[in-house]
Length: 140
Image (cartoon, rainbow, N blue to C red; front, side, top):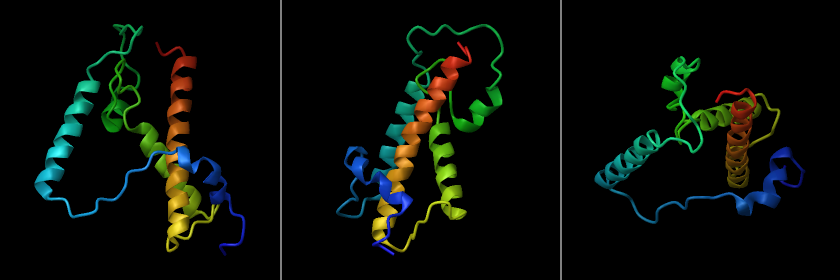
């Protein structure tokens, strides 16, 4: 199985460019996890209030208001896209793997590594495409 060329291995040439977080060398206390979660939540809330440069909020209604609640986004701010690129790309990769369009053996460490790298790459692509789509439909 490992000697076959599979679709998931096409990510190999750019894997070194994709950021990765190393696993901790020791167990992390719940209090420290809570503190870091609170810090990240605070940063997210601050970014939700910082307006994008050159974007003026219109007085009209927001057609995506209810989607923004679900996807944790805020119109005209740094969090314009919210978590939608993360959710969308993860769902696409899970559907592709679940329907066997791309073959991934989760029991193999190498396959898991390539699958995670491909998912991260897909997240960057989803961000890019959603930005282009938002700009091209004259949303602002």
